[in-house]
Image (tube, rainbow, N blue to C red):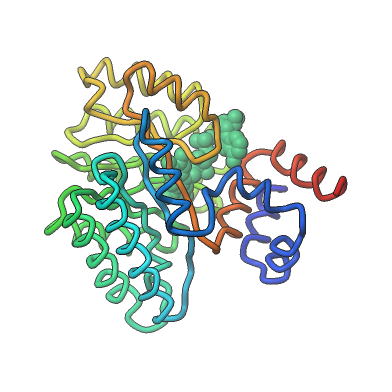
Length: 307
Ligand code: FAD
């Protein structure tokens, strides 16, 4: 229930203004967000890429303003060029939310988002890196997967994200296990209705394992995005059973979450990618992270009360 309340607050302008203007909030946000600008993103990518891979997310989502969507494209292109100039393109890709590049626009949203993300993919290809398309709430799943399919015609390395909490995802996994298909499997971060999603943690975890089995046995490149130690152990086991070498799959975690586990997996020879968000639009991302772990909320509330 608390998680649902926080996810509802993530969409509320009043809560947004309250949280964004609370003086002690910045140090807590800094745990999850690399900083406000391009330089912060490049610095974080440089630091992390000594032993890990990186996926950078220019924060922003749900835009209903076409100019804003265009500005997001420019921000990604500037980021990608900077990655190229700093010699980071081999170790750093970008993650893009389609709702930040126009998918939510009332007229021609899907077409505008496709045109926009295509420009980002073209710049990524020019500097020698790739794009993964984030997955948002279930109303966008069909549109997002259709856009990924279109992108893969010209940019076959484009990654897709599947969310184990959705009842449809097992069958989506089976459809997307072709050669080279980069699939990030996560549990899912939105507040979804029972009709389309498992809401019980045990059911979500069981679905995650079923999806992992399919992805590991397939011909694609699974990206195991979870901080859950049990699922990480199962993924290692299933990869071994499928005869996959370290180069044939990767683990992914979020910036600031279980960094010691990230380092450990990298030290054991695994490909370990850190998802690094940066930018001014941190509020909805931050609220989703608070909702994932009660201890985060307690920490947040305590710091509000003690300042
Ligand atoms: P959980 O069961 O939530 O957590 C397992 C353990 O991890 C917890 O016990 C705790 O120790 C630690 N942990 C987890 N979350 C936190 C936190 N916020 N703060 C502190 N500790 C924590 N979701 C989407 O819907 N779409 C996406 O495109 C998407 N992309 C993602 C990309 C990456 C690289 C990752 C790692 C996650 C992504 N997510 C995405 C979020 C994901 O769906 C989950 O909401 C999130 O990862 C928490 O689930 P978990 O698998 O870590 O398991």
